[in-house]
Length: 465
Image (cartoon, rainbow, N blue to C red):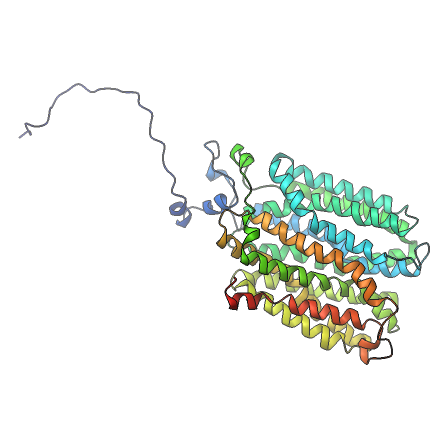
């Protein structure tokens, strides 16, 4: 029986009404195991999902051949861009003992400029590449060309000023533009394994530091610095160029991404303030051993090759340290990770290096320092994670850039500061063991900066983190 309140048998009405747009519940989709892409990560990395973007066409995150090819390319770019300045101790030893630079001042400034500026200018470079994302992939190619050109110019140098400008400043600017896209894109390719991905990429510097000091030492002793720099410029281009194809974003840029304002309010949070302060303090002394260990080894009677072995061992250990710390920081609180790095570094500096009067304990120190101090930057993904908990709108890449700038401040300041610490070889003959070698103040300063660089654990206890 029909309901009398309902009107039946009316002709069907055909109305061309627009279909409602389906709403996308990002959290629901991201939680389903059947959906292979982390949409929350897409939002966090500020790539709004536009109507023209087919989510199913995106390559998977945290795995898959595209992600691993990207990470492998970044590993090589990291190794070649940063491995050269991290092997500068070999060049410093050569410049200090060969014409036309023998007896010149500010030789240490060349290496600190190369590394320091690459750290310091990252906020500017990142800001430019975020503002003009269509140039991000071209940045790597352009930066590579600038690096090769600067190395060619540095082979013509007649004094340390020329080296500072070319091998220091110009190389650093080119390196920043070549390296920055790796950091900007890595957050797109890795989310749950972000710390591990950073650790693997940063291990590239350590691996290059194993090979490059030996190669550079042989080239310098056989052909001199001019041929060495020219050979490396050509090698850098040939080794890096073919890999640039794989340094690419996972998510296409959108017009909304272009218009997005950057949130720098995270700089004012106590979490960032404490962790950044410790980051700068640690950087003041971190680079000094890798710069002065070859010279210190020569003061113990080692040959140039055996002296270069100290830097090689440091870099070997840092490969393992970076990967291990990168895996751990995904699971532990960042202050616990920093504490592990601090304890190992401080004991290694004061106890092992401070009492080294022969090569074997010095080599042991190089391994300890590389394992613990060399892994400090692998804690940065943990810092980025904690800062974003305070300021959800903060851009992870800009947090990274600010941390890098802080490390650069410490690096640049450590150059002239280290020259002052060993000027006239103070404490020589008036103290025991390595403390009386003329490098005593340098050893103590490095140890103190390593110790206070781990003070973030106190900030956490007080409640500032």
